[in-house]
Image 1 (cartoon, rainbow, N blue to C red):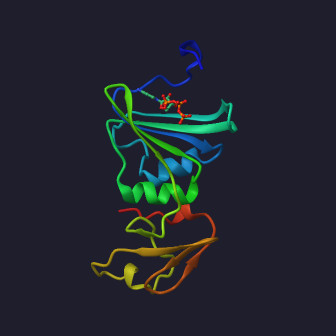
Image 2 (tube, rainbow, N blue to C red; image 1 turned 30 degrees about the vertical axis):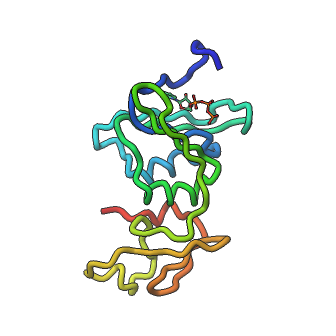
Length: 153
Ligand code: CTP
């Protein structure tokens, strides 16, 4: 794509999450805890034409590199996404996502009686199944809408 076709300009430093399945950008923002209140500069493209995917979503977060935990949950809802770490305007690292075996500390368990929902210093931990995730503590299985189970502080 030539520069005059760029919809969202290049960023100096931060993370570009590219090739997100169209319609998933808002879930990606939820996973990253981006609600517009933190002052970060974030650009979002939705239903952007893509040679490879027809249409895609793209999220650019300036000044921040993602943690491995965030990348793990992203890979659950956007396994086809590419994570580009940008330094000095260049792509310094490109990471293709893979489904993780487990996700720690990012999803919350929907079972109110689970130890992770008691006032205990226990981090949530889920095993990744083919069609969902299972809580390591109470074995509750979450199959749908993982983004709505992202732990909020
Ligand atoms: N990008 C950006 N700011 C930069 C550098 C790159 O926003 N300073 C964006 C590009 O617009 C692109 C993504 O990061 O959406 C990946 O950049 P690049 O690897 O240069 O593009 P492609 O080769 O098209 O990536 P891929 O092979 O993953 O499709």
